[in-house]
Length: 175
Image 1 (cartoon, rainbow, N blue to C red):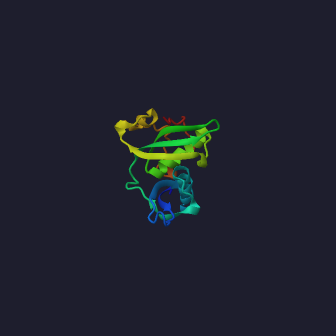
Image 2: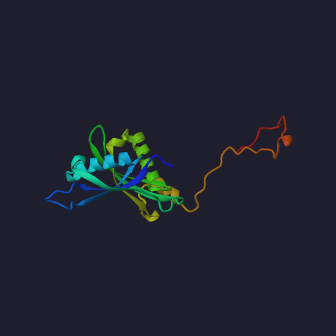
Image 3: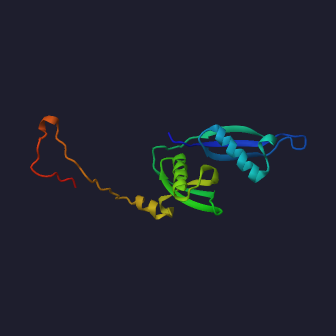
């Protein structure tokens, strides 16, 4: 199990006399647990819709699971992050088993390449990308149908310990 889970959080402004049935807002968020998912929900809702936690309520929170967790898929992630010099938009591609694995790989990649922390990264959209629509060369090279990997340093072992020679007359060929 990965570090992140995908949550669907639905919230709204508290009902008032002026607005008895407020508009619902739904977000799909990636977070380690429900508490962080709720916190991120209020963070984004406050930025976009001027609804804060004190004047709102969470209607529902559900965890979203991958439909086919044993199939390798290509994922495209649109994100925005704050660096030391400003805010940048970015599109990245990953080849993973699930959306949460792709997002986790994205956070690791952003931390390694750009020194971006979890709080400074905002995932805008995660989508499955068809093999024909893959843009990045480092993912496209893995889509070749006759892809083969070398098996270096193959050490030939005896069937059991009694067939092992104590001394060998020549060095083993391991390629």
